[in-house]
Structures are given as structure tokens and as C-alpha cells.
Length: 193
Image (cartoon, rainbow, N blue to C red; front, side):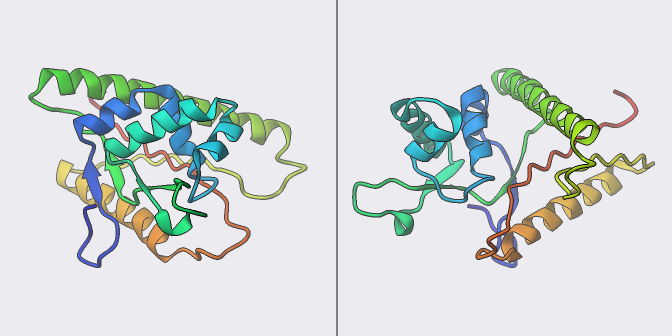
């Protein structure tokens, strides 16, 4: 795992293997289960997603081979128990590449993740219009900012945002009983799109 100079998680560009793993919708759903529980077994995910455990085990191995999750043997009940945890790095999809296969794969993953993002926005809107008055807890937000920046300033801003997210992961209270999983999607586009 890449690390920052403070020894914590870092941001890195997704490899071809990571992109291939993320291209599968079930694997993206599996990765979202890790926001609910930091350590999971195939049976845990199978129960959450309503999928057979052997199918989940196969996809967990693909995610592990791609470097998106790692085993957590210290969490296992015995030598046969396989427990998994996600890598802590922040991952970025490279929007441009010279390899046409990677370009097509990146485009496909970006499109699939955009659909996942739209589904998250739909859930957020449905919650805010239907139950938010009865449930005052902060379950999500949609923030919009419009800035005029140079490309270098934009890159520096993204580095700061990712650094803040990684710092929050590094310093979070791992024993907090009221912790919830949060999906944070950062979507940015310049005015040429």
C-alpha cells in the first residue's frame, strides 16, 4: 500500500486489475458493504446482499487479487476463517491514458460509477423529501461549489480534499459504537464538459 509521509494511507491511481474488478456491479456492491463493517466474511456479505456465499467468496478473491481488499487474519476465529478488510488508500480513476484498452476500461468504470453515484443522489433526494422531517439525523448532504481555478490550483484542491478524507480515516475512533458508513463521491468537471 502506498503511504503518505505520515505513514498513513495515500491516494493512488487505479491499476488495470482494479478497474477490471470495479467493472463488475456485484463487486462494487461488495465494496460498499465495507462501509457498514470494516471486517467481513463472505457469509456476512452474502446475507447483506442476498447472494450465495460461494459466489461472494469468488468475487472477494478477485477483489483481493486486484489489490482492493486484504485478509485480516487477526480478526479470524480460527485458521479456516477468512476475514477481509478494504485497503485504506483513496483511489482515483485516470481519465486519460495512452493504452486504448485501459482507456475503454476506465471509461466503462467511470460510467458505471456515475450510475452508482446517481443512485446515491436518488436515495438522498428520496430521504430528504419523505422522511427527513421525522428523522433529524444527518444522513447525507449534497454540496455544490463553483470555482474558477487553474489546473494546478484544482489539482492542489483535490489533493487537500483527498488528504482530509484519508486523515479522517487514519484518526477516526475505531471503537465508536455509533459510527456509520459514509459514501463520499467527489465529482468534478471543468467548464469544457
